[in-house]
Length: 348
Image 1 (cartoon, rainbow, N blue to C red):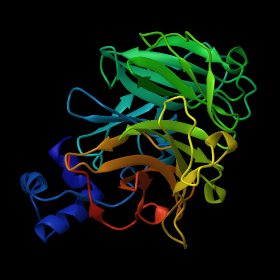
Image 2: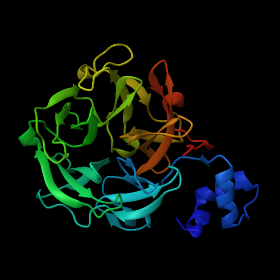
Image 3: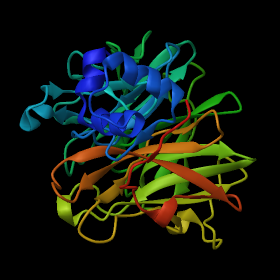
């Protein structure tokens, strides 16, 4: 990121005021103060349309974020992206890298590229993506790979279509490697499933099994202290001011489940402990969900990126960041709502 970009950012001017006590800091002083003082931020961390954010920690020291297709021309910022890519070293200050895909995949007649899942596997970067239209009777999941996180990614075509795998609305892929065996987790409001993949992550090799019920989509699994935690989104994702998206969680001692909520109800029966919902009142964010990967900082604090609609302009899903606390073995977010005040950022 250039010095000009750092100083020109409205959010950085706020941070400069906190660090320097004045608005007349030089770029060099800003960078020095950033390294000497604790990073602060205020949501959103990326104030443009960035739905279904996903995150990968790359070998070059950056975190890269990928999202569903976006058209920033509507916002007077950049252009159209098949799969937009951002990068950051602290999860707070983001710069646009470009497009992960130089051209839209052609293995399906129509649809958009949604909800990418990026992962570093077997010495290269994988990008599993959904190919779908609204109400699509046969969406599918494809795969692209690259030697670098910024791409361009080479498309390898489909892994499967919904009718081939036997699961309606097969979108929202997530790669999870359990005991050195890769699995693909996916599904959207027709059950959450997982299936074994080949060691290279390129092909389906076994039988699918079910992890959660019809209430869920946008899956993520995170292992901590002997438990596998399933994070998933419920409700309506994309209805602007009427969106009801929330994030719920369950846990299991085994990757294949059963996943239970805090009250002992199975996620197969649509149980789930609430983690995140809209802000109360007229300000803040609504429809928060479809979280990306969970990152642990140097202080042992865990952080989650996700999207939400700003109540003042509920037409874009902007990217938000908040910490997760762990209480009695369960994840919690303060007030179960997106943060809106200036607060301490990750220690990365």
